[in-house]
Image (cartoon, rainbow, N blue to C red; front, side, top):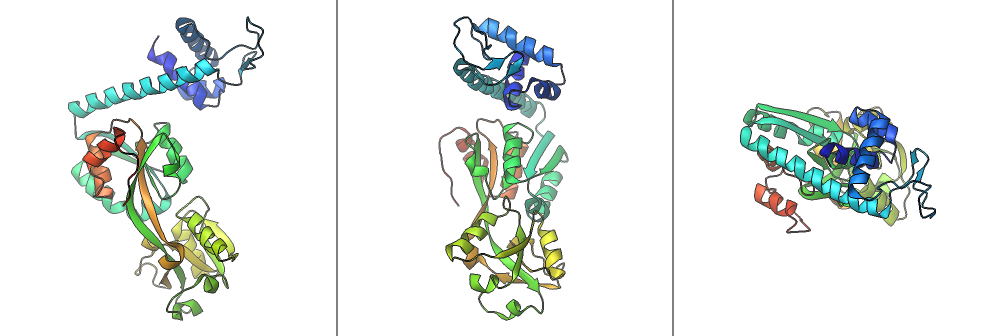
Length: 325
């Protein structure tokens, strides 16, 4: 048994049992993947991927010829152990890197456009001043994509408002709270209102976030609760795109309040809307059981000072299940 075999099994499962795709991810050949899996099966004495023509004649239909179609029950147990073994192997490497050089390495952050554009610049600046030899990478995507990046070890952590707390393989810690605002052109009728209502907003076309981003689900729920159907004429993942189309007169915008800048957005007005859509929580998510480098803890604490290293380590150790602001 070797780690190569374990990685081949894990990647095959991750790629939906597609050996060709697994081989591409592993930079090897499909026959090579099949051979390593078969050798591991022989050593374990169980078939992780059962053949259609098995000795007992039971129609399990897990492998049809050369094509794998499902994982056996013993295989599921094996895959769970493999995940833990490879996680611990990576943790050992992280420990070695930490003690070899605590101020150098890599850190990959998976986040949304809004967080990258408005919440992270000061954090990144402070982090780079403290750790100039750490290579920092920021990957963008929608919240489910960010979660999968962390699970697949393509990122060390994810930062987003939606979805992260829906993944059992992740620990999602609350970073900070924020509210929405409505943006309108300076001379728009709503700019004269003292306190907005959903009924007022429903009179105008609306430009806001894509359903996967920045509290869009809360916006939809608020209108539905009042029996209203807003005319959403454009959905975007980018706050700046929303503001651009509001300036062009396409409609009123609903954005994260942090995304409004009075100097840059001088042609627009931001109107309080927290009472309409409630308070949102942006979370930081890491893999359960992961060993983080010291500078990763620093990055998280710079992002949200309440998330101390001690609190994060307690969460990673599984000593607490829920964390609220």
